[in-house]
Image (cartoon, rainbow, N blue to C red; front, side, top):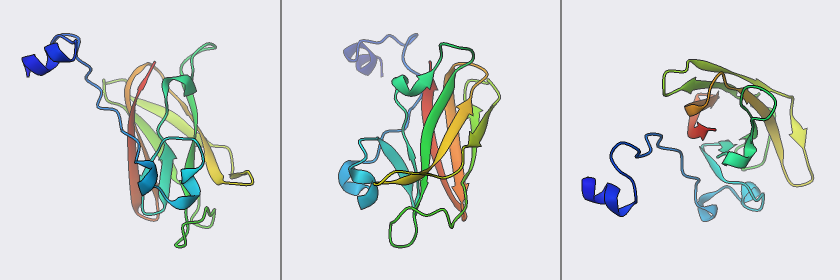
Length: 144
């Protein structure tokens, strides 16, 4: 283990402790998500963007994240018929819970989604979970 940390340029004391979610490879995404330019994770008709550091808003108060959750029908097309996903976030460093809300159902010519805002009480490692129709998707990220 120490050799791996040294090779990566980290010591045991400053090694990252937040195992962030890696996006699904583009070839494995549902067709409708492939051209969006976003990084995605999900399964079984429930997908969310994997946020990058630039998506967090930190300049006017506690950190916030604005990103998308997408519900797909059995044909792989966006649908609001399944309802909005229940979304919650929990701090993995002991920060408690974060408030999450949807802004209705949004559309462009290419995609429809549930715009989601998560308001964090603190920075650190966070796990966000969405649930719809018994399908649960979890994404882990570091809030700056």
